Each structure stands twice: as structure tokens, then as C-alpha cells.
Length: 367
Image (tube, rainbow, N blue to C red; front, side, top):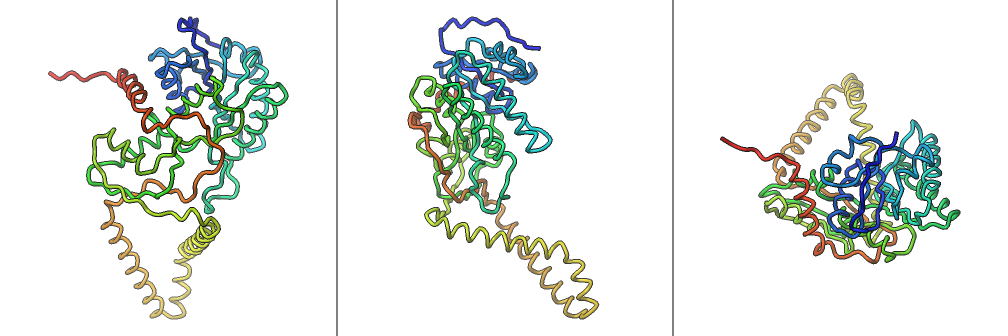
């Protein structure tokens, strides 16, 4: 059943339907779009439960799914563009691809006069860490959805924008909350000295508004802040927000030597694999060795215990050093050209979104 409240668009702004508005990114992009005032967000989710916050803050919400073209057209009625942040999953990669294909067929059949489709993809499509598995389900399904959307757009003559999102930060994002939790007075943060793969929800909202305004060509883009923030700037932004001071130490990254970097990562991976293998069978090896030479087994056990104790002591002495970010390579891909420098343009909009969220928190009255 579809729930679509009657709303009047008194401001005459173009509407953008945000599918998956019940998620962290979907909820926050609706708030930033509303704050920026260039377009009117229409939050779309399966049920009213996930959009309760947005409804309380005055965002129009519609509820239902894209199980049929008729339902889809009702959900997208009077919208000028679509931002798709949803990713359904099945029990297997093959089933997931079937679900994605069927859903996109219905969605594109529901677009009607809508000519602009914006898909929220991921930088996980790129294999930036050689130690990661060769195949990752999440990245593979996102890539499949990109290609399927591009095929459907080509057939229907529509504009498709695949935005491969970097690490998304904002007022409600889990990675941002994790950074805020780790920041406190006196902490020493060690971060890689490389342009970060971060992007704030503000920039995503700005990208949507600019795309609707015709400032970008259709295509596939890596969406990071433009210009890219350093990780030191990211940490200091959140430290200022929290009202704490921290020391940031930047560690050089040899991003100009990718072949050497990959080789070093593979060597580390092999060493770690060998270490895990030894630890897995250490009790068996100890038992066999003690039956052959009890004295040798005792010496090796002592050496192992001393090494572990030294490592634990070093860790205790280094508790004040915090390494919240690990990035060795710069994220590839085309960038959007129309984004503003969020280091200067984001603050007032972020403050307004923060005020909206804080307005939902009841104030405690003492006495």
C-alpha cells in the first residue's frame, strides 16, 4: 500500500525524489536539500517508521515500493529527478542481481517525464587495498546496478549520473560519530598525509542541486570533496564541533609508487597469513616439540612469552596515539566540476541541519 500525503509546493521549487530516505545518507541529504533551498526533497521509503524524523522536520514523505510501475509512478509523481540510494539484497549474488535488475526495470518504467536519474554508488568498486578479498559482494552489486541503469537510460534517452561516494561524513553518519567519540583533549591522532577520500553529505546535496540545474554532464563520477580535504582538516573540523583540542601527526604516504606499494602490501599479507597459520597450530606444534625436545620447547615458549609481554607494554605506553584512518592510495575516477569548496561553504548549512536535529531533543528542566 502506498502512502502519499497531499503537499503543496508553494515555493515552486523543482522536486527530487530521494529513494532510500530512511537510511543515514538519505535522511541527511533530505535535510541539507531543504536547508539549501534550491530543490524540494521528497523522501521515499518502504514504511513510515523510517521517515518519522523527516516528517517531524517538515519534509514531505511518501511510502511504498517499486514492485509495480503503477506504484512507482505514484511515488514519483510531480518529481523532476530521482536520487536512488537503495540497494536491495538477496540470499546470493545471483539473486541480488535479479532483484536489482527487476527493480530498476520497474523504476525506469515509472519515471514518466523524469529525465534525470542519480544513483548513489560507492568507491568500494575500486580495489584500493590489496589485502582486501579479490571479490566483494557489495562493490560487485553496486557496479552491476550502475551498468544496468546506464543500459536502461540509453534505451530511454534519459540522463544517468552514477556517483561513487567516498567515505560519507555528516551530522548523522556513523563514521563521523566514531571520529567524534575518539576525539578528546590531549589525544594524538596519526593520519596519512594524502588527499582524503571523504565527502560530506552537504556536497552530495550540492551535487544533486547542480545536476538538476544542468551544471554537470551525465556519467560516472567519484564523489569526494572538491578540493579534497586532508585527513587533518577532517579531524580538526570534528574537533572544533566537539570543542576539544587534539594534536594531529601526518604520516607520509608513497602514493606515487603504486607498484612498490602493492608489493609491500602483498608481502605484509603473506606474513600475516603465515603468522595466523602458526597461531592456529601453535598448541599442536608445542605438543609435538615437547615430546622431541622438552628443553627446546621451553626456551621457545619463554621467548614467545617475552615477545608478547613487550608488545603489550608497548601498546599500553602508546594508548594516547590514535590512528582512526587508513588510506594508502588516492581514489581514482572523474570528479564533478561544479562543487564549491565545502571547507568554506558548508558551515552555515551544517549549522542549520544541526539546529533542526537538536530541535527534536527535549530539553531537560531541573528543579
